[in-house]
Image (tube, rainbow, N blue to C red; front, side, top):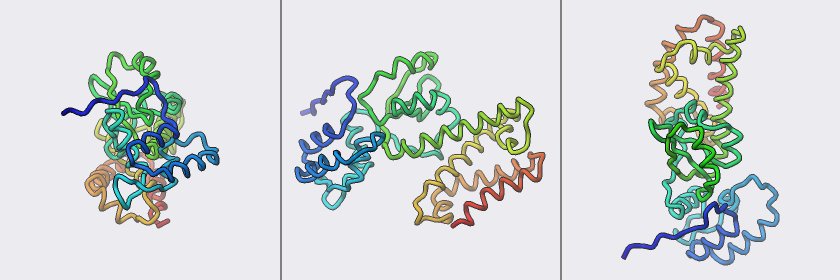
Length: 270
């Protein structure tokens, strides 16, 4: 017999009381832990935290899988199943950062806790930490030039970490381009090649390098450069080869040394 599809109110925002009640009903969390979480909620002053983040940080037992806790990843997977939407794992090495940040403004993304994760020929995939909210969809559709919207669910911890990094990177590239148009030069050479060169392969390489840098900066402190290189070997080798060509294109030898020292300082800190 097919399992009945559970319906939820339209534009329902996930709050901690709802999350605890649903998990208790499904015997995923104990009544004792629910009481503990409700007591801790009164002490919680950071309204920016998603309910999943709040619960994950309390490290309560996961009764559906003995010996484990209700981590943000476990809770996100559970939420995605309730929302009937795919779960999306943010991987900056596989994402076109300039394209996804161009879909919407940073303010719009933060206000609705959403992030474009893929831009296709006739669709845009949008990840959200609040999968039941839909009020933002009509406003976004007006800017998508007829493209459809595909919804996926994001881990709130990953969203908080990467959404800021992605838009900071996009602003840096945009700022460098404006600097070049106004007659500036020097430290902006790296980003200027994105617009002046019109080389799609170089643009892709820079996106890969940016993703590698973000991924490396967000590695656990117990990991080191060797672990990172082994984990992303193909991308590292590809970027290294592209860098050899790229540095020959630079007109300023001093600029080359500046970028090499920047990367070197990160690894020497280990």
